[in-house]
Each structure stands twice: as C-alpha cells, then as structure tokens.
Image 1 (cartoon, rainbow, N blue to C red):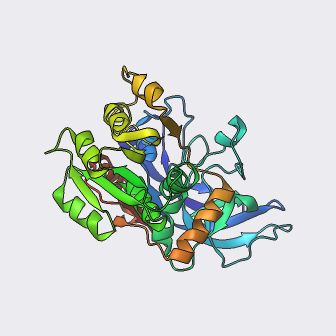
Image 2 (image 1 turned 120 degrees about the vertical axis):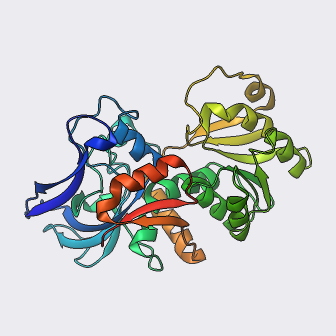
Image 3 (image 1 turned 60 degrees about the vertical axis):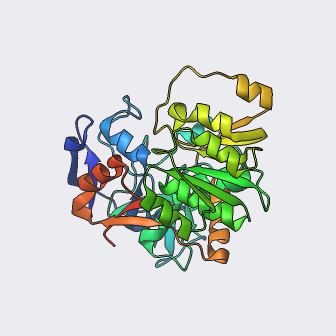
Length: 340
C-alpha cells in the first residue's frame, strides 16, 4: 500500500519539506501494530529538526514530528494490548518503558532519529502505544506525547509540589500551559509570564493566580519575589534556557527546583553557578518521559477532565505554514495538524 507522508528531502530547510508517498508493507510482525494516524502536534524540536539545527547529522530523508494520534488499523498475530478500532497515541521514545532512560532508549525517539508521525499510517510495537483519553479528540490528544508529558514530569514527578506551593511558568506555549494546568491540579499557586497582556488574560481563565508581562516588567524576578512574599518560588518551568536562566535562579527559593525544558532564549552562555551552589537549587533537565509516565499522566488527565489548550489547527496540506506559525511564537498553547 502507498503511505502519504511529509519528509525532509535532500537537505534541511522548510523548502525541503515535501509531500510524497512511500511503499508500506501490509504485513505485520507478530508484535507490530498498524495505526492510521489522524493528527500531530508541533513542538519546537520539530521545527529545529526540519531546519537542521537540532541535529545537523540527522540522516535524510526523515518524516518529522514526534507527536501523533490515531486509530488501530491492524495488529500482528501476537498482539494482546490492542485491537482494530482502538484509539492510540505513540510514545516519544519507543523503547523507554519505565524508570530512568538509557542511551538506547533515547535513540528510539520519533521525529528524529527515527521517522515520526507526519504520515497517513505508521507501524509501532504494541508497547510503543498508549490509549487515548476518552474525553479528548485526536487533535487534542496529539498534544500529550511531548509537551503534556514533559510538563507532567516537571510538575508532578520532579517538582516536589504540594498544595500551596508556588510555581512559575515562563511563557504561554504548550509546555507552560500544561504545567499551569497540572500545577493547579496539584493545588499550587501559579505565576505565569508573557509579553502579551492578551495571553496573560487568557492564562487567568485557566487558573493562573498572578501574571507578569516581562516586556514591561523587565526585572520580572523581583515581581516573582514579591508575589511569593520574598521567599521565592518552589518550582520554575524554565523554557527560555540560557537567556532566562539567571533570572530564574534569582526567582527560585533555597532548595527549590528549576525544571529546564527548553532553550527558546538560547542554549549557551556564561552562567554564574554561585546562586545554585549557595542556595542549594536543583536544576532538573526533563526529557519528556517513559511509557509508564504517559499512562500515569493520562489517568490524571482523564480523572480531572483536563483539556489541552489548542491554539490553531492546520490541515494536511498546510504543514509548512503551521511550522512557520509555530516559529513566530504567537501561539497560545499548541499548534496542531489534523487530517483524520
């Protein structure tokens, strides 16, 4: 059968992201599942992969996009977890089942180095999938695999959050808004930043307790101190990287946690380590999560009826436009491509 896909061809760059078809064998190995994919959500990693910044040595051609959602079309002879018609989500690292990852797990990621979900069909190991929360559409659920799970682990697994804790979410992209929702689920107070008053007003409707416009309040670390009675925040959701890390270190309380997730404001800089050392701050890098983490998160999402924040949905033929929109940073929440 022919499988319609988007792939990066020849060399990197949006101009080299092309629609094409690939031959897809209809035969399945005993533990393999054929999924008819219906949606993907875009992560900044996907954009960096397409333009060649994320991994300049990535072998091409490559089907991009780490997130996906779809429906089981067929199963191998020994598959017991799924049946035709089940709604499923591929996991980011296909070999990472539980616990801490090893290097082999981290080489099994979708959307680079392995082909991703920007395709009409995909084949996955039966353990490379989890069930879709029943109250979500495929377009909504396609946001969970990377942004949702990263935020969940940052807040729930690593954040040490208790009711009344102070959590700071930098920006209003997908990870930060998921972190806001999970922090409120845990009973925390949330301070969120943005350069847009309109986005901050929308964040208020999601439960944000305090908002800071960092374009008008450039010393926003002082405002965080004021909002926490000068104690500092328990957890910072750090998506800026080197450009915002110094202010995050001034915003966190002694023995607090900075969950380092993104590098939107830069990945390299000279950085003083004294605040980390002198205040016992924990800097925790977050690499999405395992299959078990994904299942735990989905149970929490289903029980609390959490709905992902989807900013804009594009069609199959609009992938380059969707990536360009993501790159502008104008989105509030997640950008999705849906064709199901």
